[in-house]
Image (cartoon, rainbow, N blue to C red):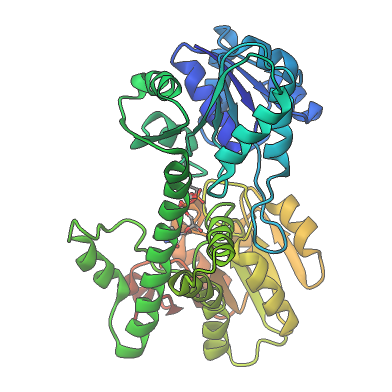
Length: 435
Ligand code: UDX
């Protein structure tokens, strides 16, 4: 099939590349000329394991190409994906300006029947709005088109795997012809397909993300109770997860969720609820619980160290999770300024996100390290915010000797309690007894 993808962010680039790998001819386009030039040189603008070789392979096979020429993409494609960003606006609402401008460009160059697929995460009703917008713009020209909502469920860091092994394809469509074309496009993925109306497909994406966020906030609240009752949340999660109706996934207690999706999508769903006067108080609780959870590591540091003024704290991991360079809504961006405001000197370690972190957090009372042991040398405490492999596999004996005080505040429950006890650490983690 001939496919055009507008927007070469995570979603557009990964799904376009995966479609090309199954033999489709895919043109990915973006208004950002610099990005397209880099992509033509196989220089991938995002940190995503496995993506570069797949891009290279499919460009060399002639299945994948990059351009800034949107009219060409519209003319030469049968299916056009809109995969542009929908960032959070200051009110919490999703900003649809990129979606609207992509829809306008498609309308202005439409000459024959196309399936226009919205892959960006958009508020319920957007597909219908795109359909109306395009119809108005083409006026009484005799061209037909369909709009499909086909949300994406990939995770950063395992985006290629998630796309190639998708658990389901959701296809919400304005017409049967378009639904069967998009269904056929998904045939090689051998995945379950659910065909719905446009609005339901759009809602599925928000409902799924909000539900996963709710699981995380729920287990974090249980973790806080475990601490007060002397229980261990890792055992509690395991026990709960043995019930297949619950499943153990997304039941890892810690410092809460961050990233480009959960914070943005829960806020957008809250905004949608308010717009129809629905009091989604459960969603409010998910969001508020997550915000409060971030600060639990600061309280734990104060409990162990007392006043943080003059203390040196090595913060391990700055990204919102491992295997990504993404700092959007990362807990580190909230936690580190609080440590600094309380007079601590922060030594920040991250294997991939230092340059970006320096831009956001600045240099005052913060030094940056790509070597974890240098960050820990002489520190009064170590605070783990991201469970990078470097952190999970650090040499604890060496760390214990390097630090001025062997104190570890672990926001990600990286180590067994017995091990930390045996290594001589004072160890405070989330929802587990203190060592
Ligand atoms: C998420 C969804 O998983 C994906 O389907 C959607 O398309 C985009 O949003 P992503 O944001 O890349 O993907 O990361 P994910 O692995 O889901 O983790 C999100 C956040 O939740 C991270 O900050 C992670 O640390 C946290 N998390 C996850 C927990 O705190 N506990 C868990 O058990 C799982």
